Length: 246
Image (cartoon, rainbow, N blue to C red; front, side, top):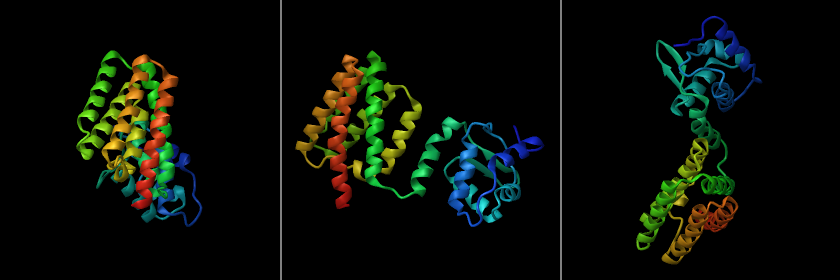
C-alpha cells in the first residue's frame, strides 16, 4: 500500500500551500478535498501526519483534525488510530461525496438546486435518446406503466416517478452524471416526495413523462431535451411552491 514517506510527503505538502491565518475548518477541508480528489494521489495512500499538514497549511492541528474528521464522515478518507489517515477511492468515485460536501457546507438555495437538477435532467434525456438500447427503452416504458398504475396512491406515484428518472439516467450511460443527480435529488427529497398534490397533477406528470419516453424511443436527442425541459419547468414550479410553503 503506498504511503507518504520520502518524497511523497514533500510532494503532497508542496501541493497544499499555506492558507491565510484564521482560516475556518470548512476551508481547510476544502483545501484538503481539492488535493485528495485531484487524481494525483492513489487510492489507499497513507497521507502525511496531522502535524505536517498543519505546518504546511499554516493552521492549527485541531483545524486539520476536525477537517479530516469531516472528510472521514463523507467517506473521502479513512482515519485509522495508531496507523494514519488513508485516501479512499479514485477521484471519480469520490465525486458524489465532494459534491455533497460542497453543497452542504454552503447555503442551500432551493431555487439554485432546482436549476441544477433541471440542467442535469435535460442533458440526461438528450444522452438517453442518443444511447438507449432496446432493453433500456423497455425498462423506461415499464417505469411509465408503474406511474400509471399508482395514480390512486400519490406516495407510490412519487416513487415510481423517481424510478422513471433513475432508469432514464442509466440509459444515458454516464455514471458521473448519475452521481450528481443523486446528490441533488437527495437535497431536494423533502419536496420531491410530494412532487404532485392530487390526481390531476399526477395525470399531467404522466403526460409529460410519456412525451419524454416517446422521444427516447424515436432516438431524437433534441426533442428529448425539449420534452424534459417542459417537464422540469412544471415540476420545478410545483417544488418551488412547496418549498415556499414549507
